[in-house]
Image (cartoon, rainbow, N blue to C red):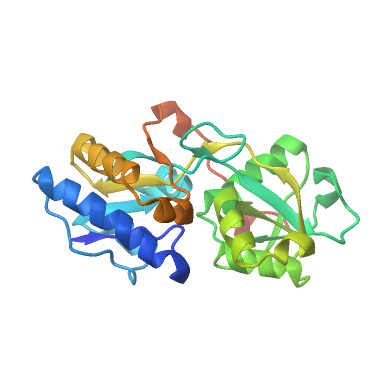
Length: 253
């Protein structure tokens, strides 16, 4: 059996995630649910979502909608108190270089766009819908593999703009304060479900929800500040009724 919380994992917040997991683990065990001693920090996130003995995982809403909704149990959504978003929801910031004279979304129509993964809601799916809403042509030209790499690609002139998960933007700009002067936020995407806590298929989500909620409420203040995790929220099913984006490699470039 495994547990993994990979979506915002960084070396500097590993201890905080371990503290969170220890509280969740003990709550699960008290409810009669077997749970591993520690988090698996090595498993690839896609492999963790597909693991047949997943006790607890964390998934982005696009891969959940596109591939995993029938093979895992959704427990609830993390609430990171994202400004401008309802509890359990998040958005992406659209970033460009601070010295780029373009300021409005339409100015970036057909400009080179960096994205982390085709199955990333925050890095690609939300940006595609944002572009359609704004009436601009999105031209994904660089797949970077990670939000941090997308940020670097824009900063280093490998792409003109990118969409970054708002919580990730907070993490990265906190780690590297110079980003605030090197880059600018030109817009925000629409809100959608934040990272979902999941377990293996067929499980009753109620005791897991209770274990996670109780753990978050008893986090030490320093750990709470590090993770910025405020709670877990049950979102209505219709929150996930979001159109799937096309494969970016099939778009006309």
